[in-house]
Length: 170
Image 1 (cartoon, rainbow, N blue to C red):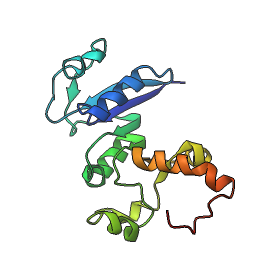
Image 2: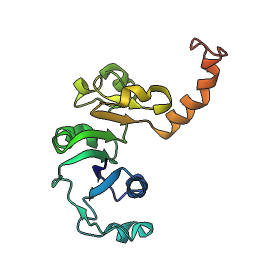
Image 3: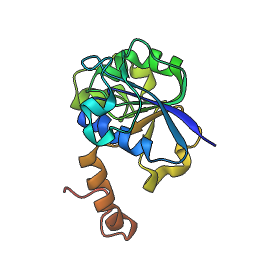
Image 4: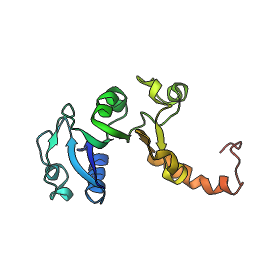
């Protein structure tokens, strides 16, 4: 089975890497990439390593219907546009920090307020090494950040082998 995919914010570094990964994925078909600053330019113009992709960046306001939409946008963008993202896709995978935390209180501890706090408990944190079973069927997935992922996966063996319990100050 092949799933249609789009990348919102495809002109940045993270978006470019995501486009590369989607292009090489046997079950994903890239149907749209958006960029405000690079609208109408070819993907290869912005990402020379992806010259073979016959696709131009479109406006984020012109989202096409897809199976999965990846939001490679800066912090704060996804929470403001989540309704449009969800209207366009069965599943939204957000690469920013907008939906990584479980509650408004947690979010406020690290950031300056969330415009859609009711969705925080609904999103699933994407760390398949720990919660692969929770990702299946989720329609709002928050991608783990690089520092958090490295830390969690680095400490995981210590917790699994009872070297750390979670009560320690690290």
